[in-house]
Image (cartoon, rainbow, N blue to C red; front, side, top):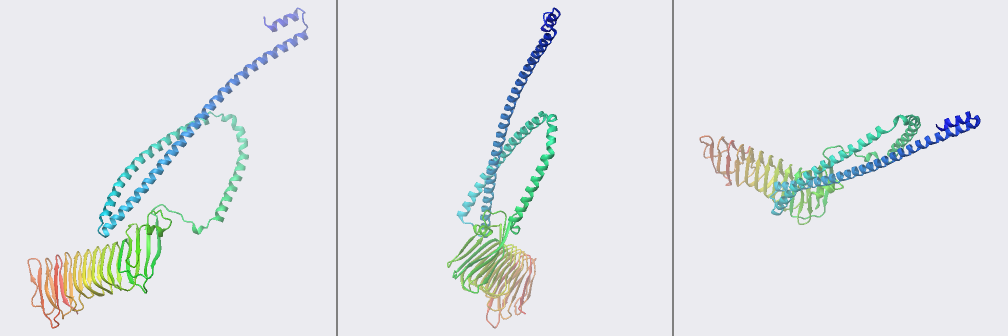
Length: 486
């Protein structure tokens, strides 16, 4: 018999009244309710403790994952920085090798420069091996970052799915309108403030937007050197034109239009130019050298009027024009460009040109040496002796005076045209191995003799002036044309 039944039996037996029984039953019910609440409270506390423990473990795991991801990003950034530095060193080394290669094209490379190039080439191989190794490490580091990132997103997705969105949605949504209204106001104000700040503080004329591609800089600059009395001139450039003219005073002025292709670390284009050039002007010599192929230099060189002992100009890709120059020995070596000489007075003019023409238009030269390949060679001004040769080109010589003493001309595949004064005596021979020899010279004692495939003409002419010039003319697969000046 339970307590409720015992209370009811006591009422029946008259031991307690009905009112007392009601009080006892209420007390019994309150006791039962308190027991149930205590059990529920204990269960909830246990569940809460378990959830807190799980949350703490998850937070620790998330923190560890975040640390791992941050460390992976730092490792990747460090490897990428090392890779970029190695790539920069490769570019710098390749540029130095290119400069030395250009110097070899412009002139004979000294032994120490050749040794330096060998060391640079060996260093380049090592740098490329380092780049390959670092590239593999960068790829591995990227994979680690991707894996950790994927793991982080997976944990975030699980946490998202485990959240009781149904229970929190109503309250969240009720606050959404208020929060978005406030956020919109703040964002709008921030944007307006930012735009106003940029407009007020940026000088838009100074803003330069870098477009992806080859970076280049173009600028003009004059190098001025006062009161220079140097006897020697040496100029070397990889790309560009050189125009040499007389100065109006005793100053040396080199006015250039420069263009730099590609990246440079110097703060200004002029600093980048001077870092890649050799400029040395004194009373001993005038040296201006830009052997870097990434720089184009178009130069107007104004030199004081004087007699220069030695002059050397070398251009890898460009033209040379000399006007009003007085000197002893002038050497020019050109590739892919034209050499023009006017109003020059020289003891020796020596010109080599590949893929270009050479023109000696006016002046006076004692000895003329000129070689061309794939270009025309023209000499219209007086000279005493000349040795001219061309491959795949035409030789044109016009001797205006009897100063000519000797002319040797050879053309592998091209025509030789020579015009001399009628008062000049001649000796020598003109021979074409395949083509014809055509003569309009007066007073010759012989006619062209035809061989199996070519012709030969013996030159023998005597004049009243007593001046005699020796001509030795040889053409391979071209004609030889001779005549008196009109």
